[in-house]
Image (cartoon, rainbow, N blue to C red; front, side, top):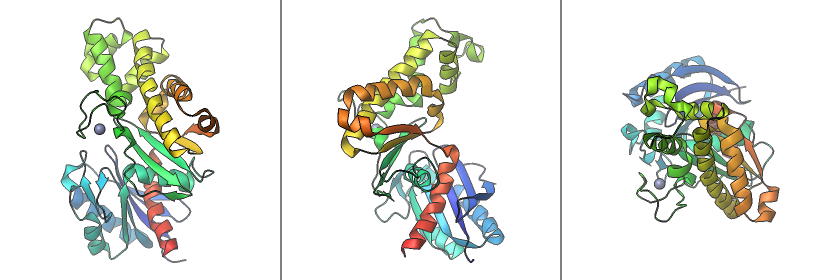
Length: 310
Ligand SMILES: [Zn+2]
């Protein structure tokens, strides 16, 4: 069988991965792209290397940022400013002679879950990526909705804090990793008692969301309160999405999903209070089954699924 692989590229806010993926969704050779510096050059090098080692049908790219209308690159990418406005699809096509498909990274992760992950059993679901910020992707009637799905930037507090996107009171400013740290540091600056003070030789500015969860699991009251507070806000966002999209499932992925027992439980409880009862009863709120691999698999799916359509 010819063209049995896709070159899958995952350029998220924190992860840069390039890999060969088979039509069956098996991840083969991976190449680590060393850093954001000279990103385009390193990417082209990685693609060249994989082209030599596999029989390739096309290149799929998941990219952090707001896609341009033609879906050939990103218009705005706070995490990858070096490629803002770059005609990435065109450059990759020129280099490889292959079809190139580009999509927003959270959308691609949703596609990955739909193809080979926790979304396989659902025709309609919404993916939340819970990390430093919050992203989203929507699968409708088995297909990726090619919309922005910037779930993290739904405003949940009209007069809330200013967001980097220009709006106020965005969900991610209250419910994501950065917010969790902000709540914790602010409480610690105001002399709250907590085991967190013993972390990082007492440097509270070095705390990570994982530290907060570790402390919460140890019964630390401040850490538990912080995670519950962020969880409540996440629940507001969940309820909004459930009411708007009436999905069969909401799939949660990203580093913060590790804090399921406190943070996500609280979010689900809050959503149950706010969403339409009939809609909430039908929705399954579940963790991703692919984790970090959703982006790579989704990028491969862009190639294989688009090729099937043509
Ligand atoms: Zn925002």
